[in-house]
Length: 544
Image (tube, rainbow, N blue to C red; front, side, top):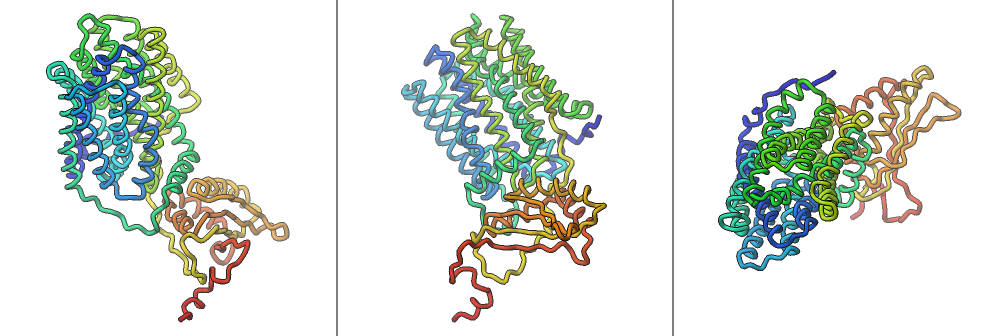
């Protein structure tokens, strides 16, 4: 059974920019967790409705489902540092407004949900460029450790932030918790201002927003490994969020319950997550990815059942340990798998779609489990939440979690834009590409096998109407044909080619029997011709 060799878990700290941003992120995470405790507990004071209380969790996760893909498209086409700074300023402003309104006593359930939703919007804008920036902060071999250290940092704060949030809320009120969060953005803003990542030279025009979103959707939809990660992530988020969404009600149900107990239970959850992060390298050394995912699903199911069928505080605190460990094991593994299975040109969009699936599952789960708790009780909702978690472990027999990508997804950088004899605009199109091959009869089976790979690569990277043609009079002559919407898209299509993709290109060239390389025809379709359009380049140069 193939397993991953253990890497140095602290290797990313060798890089100064990673150290700086990781440390500042600790403080920001602390403030966010203090704010989450204040918001969840304040809702219990504003209303008795389990649905509204559970929707506090949904208000943080629903925006990620709605806006993460748009943020990913922006992060792959614009300066990521600028997006990160903008998101931080937006969240700090909303947090300050939340503190002021609460301090003045003007807060209502709807207003609380609205403002926490806006903070979630800022987080949705921030997450994809931040996750994609890991590849800018550390080399590829340190990427799994960097993602894990991000989880460790968040859960270090989860082990103390909720408890601190409970103390602050109990002693000074929710307004103080919101003010702490507003101040916690300052160090991260400073760190982002000091960070000056190297920006690669742009070789094409910027991809239009709608086209960029479509390209991300197409790439993920045509990548089976990524689709399996998204499906398992959505199911995990939908089921596991029951504990986080209903935990304020669990804490309140105890006679000694209060914001302090809620914070302590979340602290145990964070402690379990740290344990999971520390165990992660050893587990990856001994287990494949699918077994780790099954362990995470079953660990969360166990925690939900303990919360449902026991009423002792110490057992509830104990149950939060495997829940926290399972959370970090599953989500960090999914995150790393997406990053290592995706080339840099689309990595933010792939991460955004993963987060959309996972956090969309959480938003739906928060509403479903809250509604069940309203009609049938908290214990029934937690017990039912364990069932899809157990099912999520079982379906791994048919839809296994992929192993970390071993393919080289760096760009091959061999494409050179051809010298055209017609002066095209970037938006001119559609472009029809035809590539001619001469293939011996004995090589046809291998040629068809490689062409099947080529078809998937072409379609995934933007080609339309792909077809393979064979000449009826000269059966040794084959032609690959496909369409690209515009000339700019054709250039982008070729620049997306990775070193792993290039293996199929080399295989086709080896099978080709002509004296020259395969002949490429680049043609523009015209159903009607305007005399002023597509003039020969020499003619345009001669015009006064």
